[in-house]
Length: 133
Image (cartoon, rainbow, N blue to C red; front, side, top):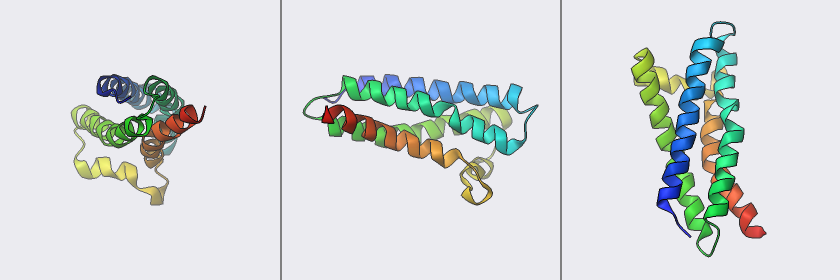
C-alpha cells in the first residue's frame, strides 16, 4: 500500500539525522580530524539509520503495491535529502553550489555519493526483502 504521509515522515527523520550529523561533524569532529575523515564520518554514520528507516517503510507499506511505495521512496529521498544538505551548507557556511558539488568528486575520494546511493537503494532492497517473506 502506498502511504505518502509515512514516506514523508520517514524522509523527514532521515533529513534531520543527516543535518544533525553534519552539524556534529562540522563542529566537534572537524577540529580534530582531517577533512576527508570528516567526510567519511558524515557519510557512514547515517547509513545504518537509513537502512533502519527503509525497513520501517517496507514493513508499513507491505502489500500488493509494495514496489510502487518503495519506488516512490527511492526516487524522492535522495534528491530531497541532498537539497536539505545543500541548504544546510548554504546557510551555515555560505557555500556556493560549486563548493557543494565538490562533495560528489569521486576522483579525490569523496564518499558522499555512497550516501545518495544508499538513499536510493535501501527502500528497494528492504521492500524486496519484506515482500519475499
